[in-house]
Image (cartoon, rainbow, N blue to C red; front, side):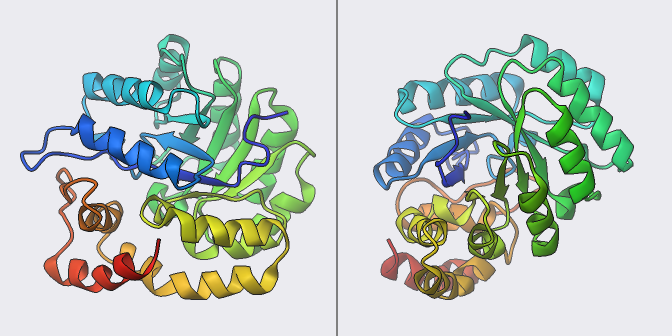
Length: 294
């Protein structure tokens, strides 16, 4: 059984920077403790929210090491490791140090827009070499390609080490199709905060979330209510969070969640180009939520 079974709220953690744009490892340790203390079930290091694409190889190595050191086995850790060159990624999977991590999250190839057969072969190639259980990550809004329910299920049934999908399509019909037809032990996590509670109510296994990085207790409570079929409470929290979710993504991710982190005095709001930090207007709009929630 997967170590993530029953772990319903995961957070895609930001990589904090100092005002001069250097990775702020002290802030990262604060954020890790903040999330674990708030009851988050597992953490994802260097997912999309972690700005992995603008980190150097040495920085990535040190960020991973900081997660392992600071988490100290308190919650499961997921390593973000994706790419759009299958051969290069296979090589990386074979050589990366995964000590201290429990699973790998790997996004579908982006930019080169493979067919469904290409997506299938990509993940089967990773399945053959992965040193840890693997979570597929479907985020068509960023990659330019949607991995269909049929392809997801084909892989889920045939792969030996692929244990889950993070589906950020926001398509509840697609999510439901995967949930209903997936093998028993296969986990379906939402990767879309807006539809995460509805997908969990449909039988999903929870979320890998952005908003829970800023409001961990409130969002976890919503997911937990959905997991225990407390529909009324789950929907109440979903409605309460809808305006803040809209704001968080208004100027792109992770600009919004880093503005929340700065308001909570956990880190600065700095991001790396080509991303730019949240505007003053957005920060002002987010402040009341930071004061009211969590």
